[in-house]
Length: 390
Ligand code: ATP
Ligand code: MG
Image (cartoon, rainbow, N blue to C red):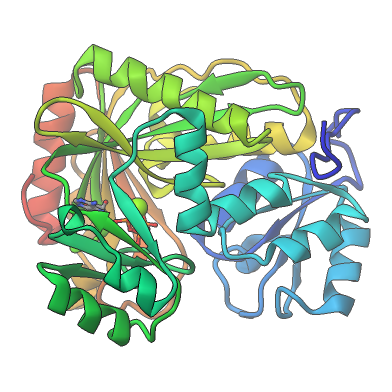
C-alpha cells in the first residue's frame, strides 16, 4: 500500500463527536451531509460560498478558499475523515489534510481524475478501451495530430465539466482555432465517435479492496449536460452492462481507490463500449439511488469514508431521473403540485437561490414497479416541466 493510500484501519463508528468532512459545498456535498447526518455523524463543509447548498445544512461550515492553510488546519483538526465532492480540489490540499485525518479518495487517484491526459493513460494501463486521442500541449503536438482523429472534440485537460472547455472541430483549421480559443492550455483531442447510447457505473471500494457496485445507468446528455438517467433491467444489453462493471472495477482497483467512483462510458453504434471519463465522487447519474435502491450512492460514500462494511446495494424500483436545470424556472417557480401529484415522484432541490440556464437546481426521481410505468410517468412530469421528451 503506497503512502498516499490512507486507510481507515479502524472504522469510525457513528457516535457523538465524530465529524465527517467534505471539501466543496455543492449539491453532491449537500447529499453527502444528509446521508452522514442520517447515520448520526456530525458534518463539516469547507467552501468559500457562505450560501453553498451543503454549507446551509451542515453542522459546521468553514467559509474559506480550498487552499487556505489556516482553514485547512481547522478543518483537519475538526474532522475524523474528509472526502471531496468535486475533482478540482488541488491534490496537494488533500495531501495536506491527510497529515491530520483520514482522507479518501486518495490524492493520487483524484489527481488522475482531474487531468484528462493522465486519466486516459490510466485507461490504457488498465486495458480498457477509450476514444482514440492525442495530447496537445505545444504547437508541435498540434501539427503532429493524425488526420484520423478528425472530426474530433478538443477538451481542456483540466477543469472541464458539463461540456465546458470543449470545442467540436471538423478539420485542422478548426482545431487550430479551437486551441487558440482555449488559450493554448494543455488539451486532449478525442476522435468524435458514433454514439448509440451513454451509460455509467458507480463502484464503491473500501480500504481493504472490497468492491460493490450499483446497476449500470443509461444516460441521455443534452448540450453536454446530463438530462435523463434511466435504470431498470434491460436498459442496456446484458453483455454491455457486464463489461461496464468489470471495466469500472479494474479502473478503481488500478487506482488503489478508496471511496465512491463513477465511470462514464460511450456505447458505440457497433455495440462496443469505450470509457469516457471518471469522477472520483458521487455522480449526477447516480441520484436515482436515493429513492430506487436500499442504499444510496451517498450512504455508500459515507461507509467507504468511515471504513464501515460495504454490502451490495439492491435496486428495488425501476427508476428515471430528470435533471432540473435552471431553464425550467424561466417562467417562474415550476408547478411542483402538479408534478408531485404523479405517482412515484421524489423531488430533490438543492437550495440554490439563483436559477440560471444550465445550472443544476435539483432533480426529480420517478420510481415505479415496472420500467414502462416509470417511463410513462417521467414523460408526463417532463411535459409538465417543459423538459423535452426522451
Ligand atoms: P461532465 O464532467 O459534466 O460529465 P464533461 O464536461 O467532462 O462533462 P464529457 O463527458 O467529456 O464532458 O463530454 C460531455 C458529452 O459530450 C458526453 O457525455 C457526450 O455526450 C459528448 N462527447 C464527449 N466526447 C465525445 C466523443 N469523443 N465522441 C462523441 N461524443 C462525445
Ligand atoms: Mg462527462
